[in-house]
Image (cartoon, rainbow, N blue to C red):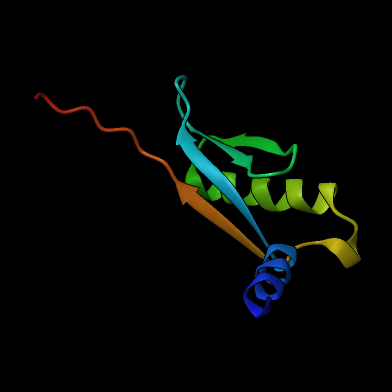
Length: 79
């Protein structure tokens, strides 16, 4: 039970975005469990856009305290 409470508290304090290279260049970020999507030409711009998107999506009292960016990189190798 204590583990479940801790997960609930952490979920309220953190939002996770998957970050991928965009096919046309730059990066895209999509929030897990929320309808939030944004993009940026550089990682620094993407960070600003993610913060802005989170601030627009949540009311101040419900806004997560942390934003986690999970970088997803596909790599293809010859078998």
